[in-house]
Length: 223
Image (tube, rainbow, N blue to C red; front, side, top):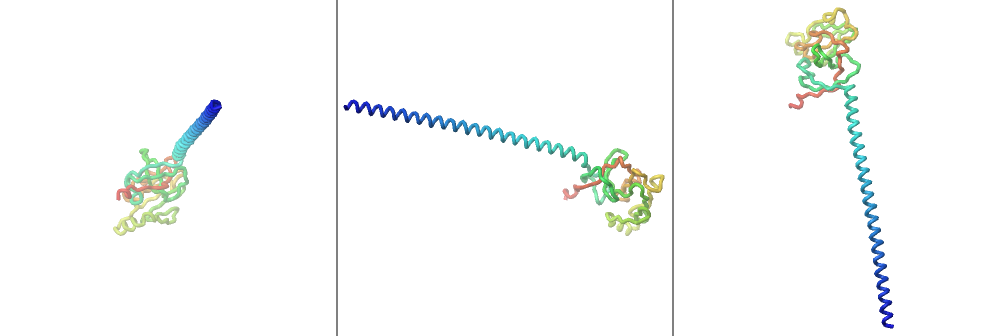
């Protein structure tokens, strides 16, 4: 009887151990599956992040390239050369030029001169107009027009007994009384010393680059 009871205890013990081991194996298997699942999710998330990052980089590069390509069609960056536009523009100032735009009187414009250098000047005369300067007054088709951008310089020059802009007419620059179609008359704001249409003649439309949309003065940085 005692022997039988001992055998039954052993059997129960063996059965309990077996079940415990089985539970352990099941638990271990579940943990391994969880780890594999988590690892798989991490890898998938990692791949998604890499793909998103790659797409962002490609989109950014493409956008920059497209902006530069479009910008080169409509805009140009150049610098002021010389002192013909003092006091409004100074040597070395950086200019943002808007190309392919309608030009109006008194616009600051840039063009290619006879030496193929980019120059910035003030647009004074348009095609078909008669331009006359007399005693520091601009006449367009016989009507006086104020030049507010140089009024201080004109007043200072006249106080010293001199005209700021020498007398001349558009007819002095061309064989016709009015500016021919496809040509413009430009002057520097620094009238007594500027090289402009009075020196090298009218500017053809095909040599016009555009008008100054924005300018950045280096003199402000030096201060």
